[in-house]
Length: 292
Ligand SMILES: [Ca+2]
Ligand SMILES: [Ca+2]
Ligand SMILES: [Ca+2]
Picture (spheres, protein in one colour):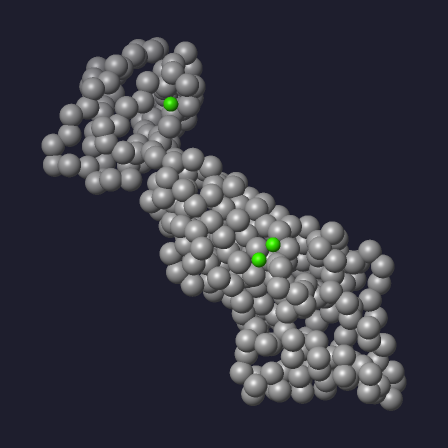
């Protein structure tokens, strides 16, 4: 246990605790790095202000496209990222300093395709093993000495690929290598207990949409793989019901395929026309076409 910093500096006991704590965390780092960090922390401990009751940390998971936009659905074989974000939930909290966790996912639906990226300020003492299918083990990192406030911050992302149709449920739980992978907040000398940390989960649907031969009868009430280009559409009585925006415009939808169209394509469709009042000079207002 460490006493708070006194006006005239750290006690020997404080310094001893801090050095031991830091060196334990950096057991996998080089000696030089360890010494540098310990020196930095000792110099900057005054930044670690008094803590307060009810400390909490949130670890949130989200799947995103490769640009960081959250997604809830993805096509089979597409790549995406799993991102972890952290928030200091304390009122007027100074931020999360160190964050590590385990993440589980069903390996039959997704795989890790590369190394994790850790984002500033969480770029120190990076940890994480993703070689075991279905597990991101002890993944996380530490920030610097500057406090961070209560805004949610991105800690890391892991590149992944959807490998089978189904639901990828990501769950997370506390890291196990302690105290090296303790969760720490600024202003608190003790690790944050896992029972006051929110470990997030996230569900991502993988759909094997858009493969050939493509078939859609709308019998499930959903126009799978259709995206509206103009006008509006709804599925009514097992039919894809089109409404142009105006009398002389087209209602136009696209079918998203994950495979390229072959040179020869055969389309079969049943078209029912409603409210027919085609202008005499434009009898071909209804059209099926191939778009690429
Ligand atoms: Ca664990
Ligand atoms: Ca673990
Ligand atoms: Ca359907």
